Each structure stands twice: as structure tokens, then as C-alpha cells.
Amino acid sequence: MNEKPILAVIGGSGLYAFEDLKDIETIEVNTPFGKPSSPITLGRLNGKLVAFLARHGIGHIFPPSKVPYRANIYALKSLGVTRIVSVSACGSLREAYAPGNIVIPDQIYDNTHKRKRSFFGKGLVTHVSVAEPFCEKLSDVLETAVKETGSTYHRGGTYITIEGPRFSTKGESNLFRKWGLDIIGMTASPEVFLAREAEICYTTMAHVTDYDVWHVSEEAVTVDMVVRTLMKNVKLAQETIKKMVDLIDPTIECDCQHALKNALITNKTHIDPKKRKQLDLLIGKYLD
Image 1: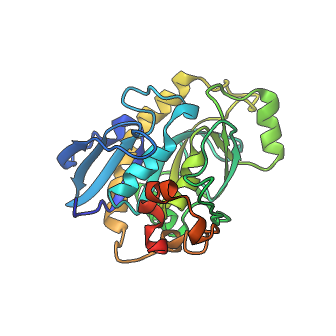
Image 2: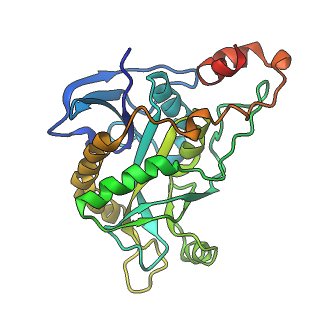
């Protein structure tokens, strides 16, 4: 395809049921890391091309640990995507971050242990910088868009990603609070790190659905609680995405889009040819 999406959205399958989404097309994409969670839906919002991917698959068939994160990010990269907004549920570890609020995190703590965290490995080694894991410029756009909806939101905070699929124990939740963490979820990692390796700007619109299990005066988190809040916030997420599309200036580049420039450490003469071919989409411009 010649035209590149101005924005990609990773979230629930219901997000792309926009009344204003025009010229809808669904495409299947294959990657060296398998198929993504779902076909990718392309459509136009306010005349601009946008891509949508259902993180957990159509009908929510992938648990957090089994989401094909590498295939998802690689597939979007192959379509020319340079910006991703993730829309996800999270639990709050802070009194001030109340259910129904939006959080735009700026830091992350990865507490997962079963997931493939990198495109790279034996035969082609990189050390990419993720000191600031979320793209500040795209987070600025997201904040402006959320603010224009009139929603209650919080800019900043550390998102801990747990393995799942179970929810936390009270002991775990209270420990995370003592660590100074702010919100908790199951999908931000390794998605945010893979986006950086793919040189894609990435931000998260985290919808607070509950107070996890630490809050003594609130009921413990349940699936029903999460789903109810997310369904209530679908319209809010859609309105925010529409505003983001109008606010993005595609001519402005970002450091995220050059993240691999100084990250490759394997000597070019020792790169595994198969790995080189597999990752040409990501690193070809630095090796040619």
C-alpha cells in the first residue's frame, strides 16, 4: 500500500465500530513472527487513514501471555505505521486515580516472565534505549485530545505489567503500592518495548476500571467490573482517537523513529544472514 496510516490503534475489537469510519477495509498480514492477533482494519477518520488491531483477537481469544505481540507490532510496521495509541484497561494503585479516570503513563515496570520481549536475539544483538518508554510527543497529542473531551485524566505515572491472567493478591497489590507504582495491567509489556525496537512512537490511554484489590472500602476487581467500565468508555476512546487524528502532524519526526540508529552492537560481518533477512524491515536502512 502506498498511503501510510497516520495512526494505529491497538485495543478491543469494539473500538473500530465508529459511525464516522469510512472506506473500511480488512486485511490479513503475515509476519516472520506469525499472524497478528486479528486482521487489521483500515478506514478513514476525517479523511485520514487509520489502522485498528484487536489485541486479544476477535472475540477476545488470546490471554495476555499468549498475545502475539511481536507479530502485532511487526504487522503494523509493515503497513508503514509510525504512531500507535494503545487503549487498555488498568487497575488503580492510587486513591486519586479513580475508576472511570484516564491515565497517560510515562513509565513502566515489567513484572512479566513468559513473554518474548524483543525482535532481536542470537545472531543480531541490539541494546535499545527505553529510559523514557512512552513517546512524549505522542503522549502530548493524546493528552490534548483527552482534555478536549472533558474527561478526568492524569498525565504521568508508572504502569506495572503483571503476567496474568489472574488478578493480583492483596499482598501483591499492597507491595506494588509500597514500590510507588500507580496503575496495573497485563498488556503494556512487551508491547511498548517492541514498538521502540520497531521505531514506532507509542502511547497508552489507560482506562481505570477498578482499585485492584488493595482498597478496603471498594469491592475487589472482577471481569464484570472491567467490562462494564470499558464498554462505558468506548465512546470516550473513539472521540479521543478522532481528535488525535486531527491533531497529529505527520511531517514532524520524533527520536522514537530513529531508536535503532545507535542500538545495533553485532559486527555487520557477523550478523546471521537469516536474522538479517527476517528483520530487514526494521534494520535494513542501517545495514545497506
